[in-house]
Length: 150
Image (cartoon, rainbow, N blue to C red):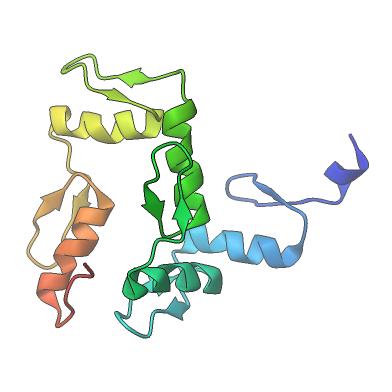
C-alpha cells in the first residue's frame, strides 16, 4: 500500500476514495441527492457551486469550450471531455436488437430500456412512468409553476 493510499478517505457506500474529508462530503451528495446550490435564473438545483457557475453559461447563451476536431461548442469542460471520447473511441457498444451503436456501455444500457419497455421512474402524482430519470424530472414541471429550461 502506497503512502497516498493511506491518506485517502473511503466512502462507506460505494468505496470511492477521496483525499480530503471535504471532498468526501461533496461526494456524499451523489448518494443523498442533496443539491444545496440553486440557479438564480431558473431555480435548477445543483450539488456544487462550480456546477451552478458552469450552468450559468446556458443562460448567457455561450459555449466557451470548443472541440478541436469538429468545433462543436460546450458549456462545461467536462461535457467537452466526454464529447472528445466520441472522436477517440475505438470501442463501441452495439444493441443486439436494433444494431444501434454507442460509445459508452452506460448509454447502451439506457437504450435497452426502450426494447424491454422497462420504466423504472414513476411520477408520484399522476403515475406516468419513464425510462429515464431526466424525463421524469422534466415531466414533474407540468405539476408545478416552473417552466422547462431551454
